[in-house]
Structure formats: C-alpha cells, structure tokens
Image (tube, rainbow over the protein chains, first blue to last red):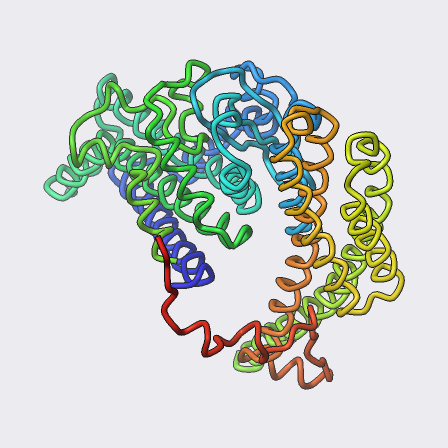
Length: 300
Length: 194
C-alpha cells in the first residue's frame, strides 16, 4: 500500500462515519420532534445555544488550551530540532508556520490546536523532545501539522456542537415530560402516539450516549488520517513508527492534561489508568490503540 | 420545467470547468514559486557556509581538505541558484551532502571538537540546510504530481486538453538509468569475513 492509498482510505472512512453521524443526528431530532411535538424553531434554538457556548472555545482554542496546559513559547536556540523540523515541514507543504510551545514535563506527548492553519499552535513536552531523535520528532510534528491542515479542530468543534445540541434537546424533552406530562393531546392518536412517545423517551435517554460514541469514532478515524497524512508529508513511516513505540512505552501520565484536552494529544495522556476493559475501553477511547496505528503504518 | 433542469445542468458543468481550469492555473503558479524556493534555499546555503566557516576556522585549521570541500559546496550552490538548471542543483546538493559526513567523521574522532559548542552548532545548521533543500525539492515534486495527475485523470483531462495545458517536468530526474536499476554486481550475495 502506498501512502496515497492509506490517506485516501482514511478519508473515505472518515466521510462515511461523518455521514452516518449526520444521518443519526437528523434522524434522532426528527423522531423526537414528532414524539414530543416540537417544531424546527426549537431545534434551531438548541443548535444556536450550543454553538454560542462553543464559539469562544473554538475561536480562542489555541490561547485557552495553551493557558490551561502551562505552555511556554519554544525558541529556535533552545529547541533547534523542534523549530527547524516544523519550519522545514511547513515549507514543503506551503503552510504558514504555527506558533511553537513546550510544556515542561518528563511525560512524552504533543498536541496541535487552533481554528485554522493561520491561527495554529503546536506544543510538545520537553520529555518528548529530549527522548526522540530528529527523524522521530519530524514524524510527530508531521502528524500534528496534518491535524491542522485537515481542519480537525474545526471538525471536532462542529461535531461537539451537534452532540451538545442533541444532548440539550434530549435533556429538555425529558425534563418537560417529567414535570408537565405530555404536550400532545390529540384524539384518536392513542396507540401510535403512545408508542411514538415511548420511542422518543428511549431516544432521549440513549441518543447523547450514542452521539458521543460516534463522536469518539470520528476522533479515532481522524487520528489514523493524521498518521497517514503525516507520513505522506515526510515519506518516512519509520520516524513516526519509532516515535509511537517510544511514546507508548512511557507510562507516565501528563499532569497538564485533563479529560477536556485529552483528545488533542498524539497519545492518550491520561494513560487510561481508570479505564474500562476490552471492548468498552476501545469504544470510549479518543485514540486508537498504538499497536493498531503502528500496524497501519507498517503496511506502507 | 425541463428547460430549467437543462439550465441547471449546464450551470453545474460550467462551474466544474471553471474550477478545474483555475486549479490548473493555480498549480502552475505554485510550481514556479517552488522552483524559486529551491533557488532561495541554495542562496541561503551559499551565504551560510562562509559565516559558519568563520565561526569554526580556529578549530578546523588543520583540515585543508574540508575547507576545499566547503568552498566547492558554496560555489556550486551559487552557480545553481544563478542558473536554475536541474543538473547544477543536483551538483550543489551532492557537494553539500558529501561534505557533511566528512566533517562528522572529523568531529567524532576529535574529542576537543566534539565538545565544542560552535562546532556542534555548525554541524546542526549544515544538516538543517541539507534538509531544507530536500524539502524545497519535495514541494516541487508534490506540486508537479498534483498538476500532472489532473492532466490525465478523467474528467479533468478533457478540460486540460481543451485549454492546451502541458505536463510539468518537475524535478528533472531521468526515469531510467542507474539510480532506478539494480546492477548485476548488486544482485550477488555479499561475502562477510568475520
């Protein structure tokens, strides 16, 4: 398989999951609107409300994440390899160079953030930069730059707004049902209306969880895509493979990370210490297992 | 009603043609810019070497051979950046790449040099310069590939032919020759004497 094929395959799968996600959201909202008898204006309100609460985190995503992670700017003098590697990769992709930051921590990790390539930031821990050689740092930076180039932050924001809207609608419907009883009072609708109502309740309870699971599936697929795109840039799968191997052997969790920022990192910074077992751990993971990522890259 | 459908279809086709034409023209300008970028990196190499040489002159004064190689690297970079010819660019890059291992051997074998800060900086900058040249060429390769792909893939090939777009040669590397073939000597087993 060539890196062209791997990138194309991941893009296809990504589109497929996104289409399924949109179909799910539209379907759920439609069924609930029929079951609970609310109109499109209600739905629009939910989406706008969620969007407004997300707009701040999207617009200033770089500043916010960097502030809560305790990152400091990285200079060329202090981090020659990190700086020049990013400079070279951006030159080859004709991309604006993102601002570079480091977190002082021995745990090995890196992340990229920013609403588009013109407002991007890439951050790595000093632990990672100390323990990886230049080719491995190149693999990691190429992965992060691919996230920026593929507009993954923007995608993640849109997806989370949709998930949030569905969660909000479900919440409102369940509350209104609990407090005020059914809003519908039509005659002759009895049986079907009742069934539909029950379906609506079940959906209202389950849909936020299902939407979150699909959101995590999207996040995992975009990680595979970033791996493939990164290798398409460097043409050196071994760099990223060795970096992933080294990072996965590092069991130290990153103190600066928390559940809100975990999905941005190149490898799960929380190390799934409190995670579940087997299938459930995989379904709720923001990142694919490292062994699978390495396997995909070794097929190149 | 049927007239409306025909108009919509024609409009969609027209937009597609415009989109493909514009992307081909954009790629052409990007290819020109990437060739200029290679020239840019060669100029950087040519001006970097004398500065770095000055910084390490005291330490490498016994190594006449190295200085000659550095001078050769610098002059070939200047020549390539002036002429822009493929073979000059290749010569400049191979001169730079052959001087790096020589200096590395020298530095590794001399503990005093190895621990010296300015020599280490020199080595890193030289290596980075070689990388930058490589990435500048890669940009040209990728852009030419994207452009040439549009010229042969259906249906954009129809539009490309319509407007007379020609393939871009990108980096002038021969598609046949010794660098893509395996010689008979290379197919034999290597004898190892332990």
